[in-house]
Amino acid sequence: MTQQLPDPNGKFGPYGGRYVPETLMPALDDLIEAYEEFREDPSFRAEFEHLLHTYVGRPTPLTYARRLSEHLAGAQIYLKREDLAHTGAHKINNALGQALLAKRMGKQRVIAETGAGQHGVATATACALLGLQCVVYMGAIDMARQQPNVDRMRLLGAEVRSVDSGTKTLKDAVNEAIRDWVTNVRDTYYIIGSALGPHPYPLICREFQSVIGREAREQMLTQAGRLPDEVIACVGGGSNAIGIFHAFLHDPVRLVGVEAGGYGLNTGKHAARLAIPDLGFAIADSGNEQSNIETPNGKAENLNSTIHNPKSKVGVFQGMRTMVLQNDDGQIAETHSVSAGLDYAGVGPEHVYLRDLNRVEYTAATDDAALAAFHTLCRLEGIIPALESSHAVAEAIRRAPALPRNSILLINLSGRGDKDLNTVMKHAQRTG
Image (tube, rainbow, N blue to C red; front, side, top):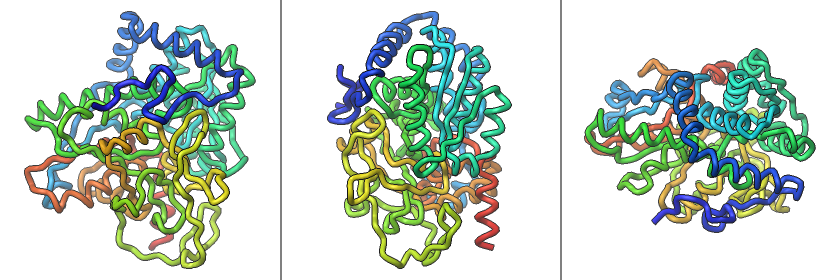
């Protein structure tokens, strides 16, 4: 039986917990107490559910991808349309729930971290709605490749702070947000954007995102007359995936999480923590061989030269015990993904627990496969997906042709791709 809640110490099996400075322990204790109180408070739940319906636009639709299914000539593909939620992604579910918690706790200042910018936009949106001050930390590289979301956050009244340390991506944005929280813990609420961090954040995020799975399960039964054979979702920190997986954990449904394969798991330039090739997990690829690529710093690099592959090991990272990509010295490894939201060295602890239980299969899709899937969904279904979601689409495209035509694949389309158009068009120009 899969564990439904973390234990009293915030652990999913051996993962999770609270590994933070002593100055933050009282804040986490207060958060646990407030969450336990308000999750059972009818007025809190009524306010949250009312806003999900009238502001976020829930329930989001379930779309049968007819032309994609016909094109693949295999399984029938359905899309859970989180791209149609207000702000364009699933992130608003968690951000709004936590912002309501912050207001109930009397916190007037909210901080957040963001990679692809969607969590930052969602947090800025929730803070504007509720009248809260908002500061968002974002890596300098992510700000450059996600400029539309930076502009949106600022229009919504948030202060966006560039992080120029380390890899200048999500990992470093989290580090800066934690430093801010330590300094301003009395009046500041930290809205963590994924199912990770110290307890109770993985639990809180999963609970606010589980609306995705509850809706999808009911919609599948109504529209298709049965549950899907497989549910597929991309996995960065893991919030959209845990949100849709949770409703199906006790059903005879295969659950598949898709990580960022980057330039390939044999190149050392990826962000796959759970999809380990020597355990037999497949890697969705476009089939294009590349010996030279352009790295995130813009320099050409030959991948046939000596490669130092990061190793995925259990470690303590940003407040939790989880699987972390590390170099040979045990330091946090640099990661790479064409999608900023998947470019992260750690992963939510519940995902590692579900991997250990063999309840969820974790695989990876390369940048090329995700980009190819992006274009395929655009042209066949008139839907522009986020590059994060395109990794899940790529895995479905790989699997569907080998499955019977009466089988069903459900993809969590976690966000829309407006924010990624600059990245996609630059890639198209480079490849001709």
